[in-house]
Image 1 (cartoon, rainbow over the protein chains, first blue to last red):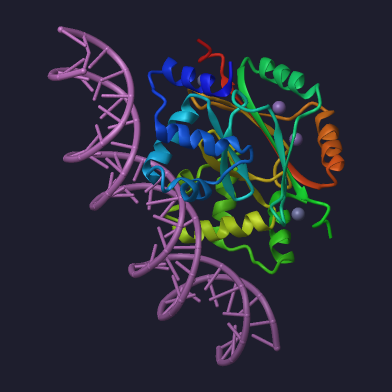
Image 2 (image 1 turned 90 degrees about the horizontal axis):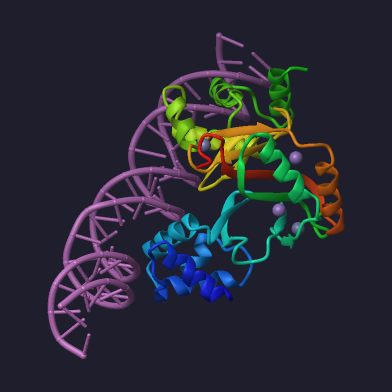
Length: 138
Length: 138
DNA sequence: TATAATATTGCAAATTTGTCGCAATAATTG
DNA sequence: CAATTATTGCGACAAATTTGCAATATTATA
Ligand SMILES: [Mn+2]
Ligand SMILES: [Mn+2]
Ligand SMILES: [Zn+2]
Ligand SMILES: [Zn+2]
């Protein structure tokens, strides 16, 4: 089942339909990198209204289609694990460069155990590193 | 050296003094749990102005006294590792309950290695789990 | 397919959140 | 204590996010 289908079925399953604006927002996020609200509104202002972007993101978030990641001061939106490969970020505090990495096997297990220990059913997690990239080290 | 002293010296070292409002904000964060901007302004509105809260948090953040963590939809402020034991959170998606945990030895090392692999000098990291607590499981 | 019912959107206005300039107050220096 | 510098409060402002409602699109039903 490809992404489109998965999107449609996730929406349908929750009583929503895939409309042109929702499609547009989803596409804008396909690029892979986390996008700020500002970037999204600029990209999509010809296609859909600002208010609709917020409403759509709220829905997508509720259905687990997108997540917010906090990077330093600002947050950004990106597709959730269900719609893009699970990964995390390391962000440069000076130049803002962002690298995505998938984590070494083992961490997932540790996190599951932690959740279990506190009697939580873990639904998701986020792991963000910050520091200085090779260009900005000194 | 206790927290108060460490706070004073961090401020002094950077040319700031410990004033009553700054003290108040710091105290409000001592409770331990991450606080939203809204909570902070409500708690402190009798003591200091909204603008001053923002200004103070900006300073504290710059000096590494506080950090912001993204929890689901909203970000929250809490004392940094320098002023409270290093820890992470697991948050219930339904009732909002937050549990802090310190991580099993081993993760820190893995994260350092990841940073190294991408030639980053790691300054800090955040790790947030989400799921359903024992009360909200079903 | 036509019609009715429901869901979604755009638009404008309202609210909330975050920033800024500046005069009043507090802290520090000498 | 007087002079200097830092900090704060108090608007006013600007940006971000939310909301009501009428117009439009989608879905359900006949
Ligand atoms: Mn992971
Ligand atoms: Mn850690
Ligand atoms: Zn950099
Ligand atoms: Zn719960």
